[in-house]
Length: 284
Image (cartoon, helix red, strand yellow):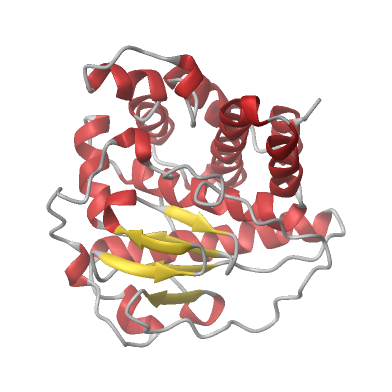
C-alpha cells in the first residue's frame, strides 16, 4: 500500500518506556459515552488464540528507542515508520468520515512496546499478548516483533498484512468513541453465556472497519494487497489457530471468529462504506 510518509504533527505516538505521546492539535472531543470495553476488559487475552506466548523471542521491539520524541520513534526502523504512516492515514480517513456524518472525532494514541512486560491503563500487559487496544486511555499497543510472527502465520511478508493489524486495532477505537463497545459490554453483562459470541461480533466489526480504511484509500492499494489482507485474516481465524495448535475446533471458545468470517468482514469493509459494518454488531 502506497502510504504517504508519517506526519508526527498529526499523530500521538510514544513507547511503553514513556517516550513521545505529544498530543496533536485540532482534534475535538466528543461527548458520546466511552465504554470500558476491548478484549482486556472482557477478560480475554486480545491475541490469546494466536498462541504468541511470552516465551517467544521478540527480536525487533528493542529497535524502537525509549524516551525519544515522535520523529525519532517513528524513524527508528522500517516497521515503526510504516506503522506511523498507517496511523497518519487512519487519522485522516476516520476524521474525514466522522466530519461527513457530523460527528466529532478524536485520535487514539499509539504506543510501541519497548519492554517485554509493561503497565497500561487496562492493567499489566506483555509483548506475548500481541497488538491490542486499551479503551481506558484510548491507546493502541503494538510490539513490532509481532509483524514477523504474523508473516510466518500468513505465509507472506507483504505490507498490507501488517497494516491490517494496525487498522483492526484502530477499529476498536472507533467502536469505543461511537459507543458500540459500550452496547456490546452491556449485552455481555446481561447475557454472560453469550459473552464469547458477542466478543466475536466486536472483532469482526473491527475487521470490517480495517477494510473500510483500505477501501476509502483504494487508489493507494498495490496489486495483491487485498489478497494479502484476506490471507492474514484467514491465518488468525479461531478455527485455523485451534487446528494449527492440534486442538479440537470448539466454536463456543471462539473470540475472534472463523477464518471465513474474518475474511468476509474484511471484504465487506473493503467496499468503503463504514455503515455496512454496523449490522455486524446489532445486539438483539
